[in-house]
Amino acid sequence: MSLKWTDVQDIAIELAECKPETDPRYVNFVDLRQWVVALPEFDDDPQHGGEKVLEAIQTAWIEEAR
Image (tube, rainbow, N blue to C red; front, side):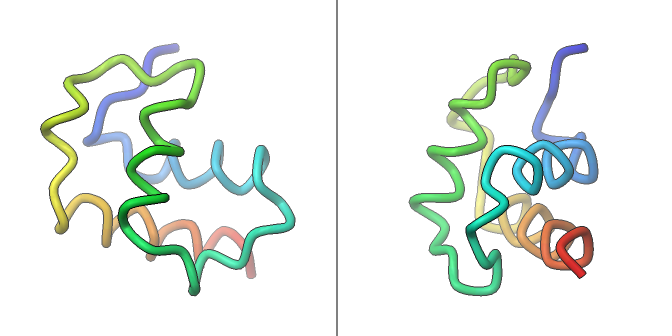
């Protein structure tokens, strides 16, 4: 399965699984973007990860971490 920026929920699940010690409420967008791009299944243009997409990923990750 390849992940695109639009796969917000799937990206959030992957981040929750690979970074269980991280509280997503305190992650800055620079780190978040790097972590998303570094996911093994991520296959999209890194430049397309704007602030709105990162905010949506962070929100989904917060929900996933509950």
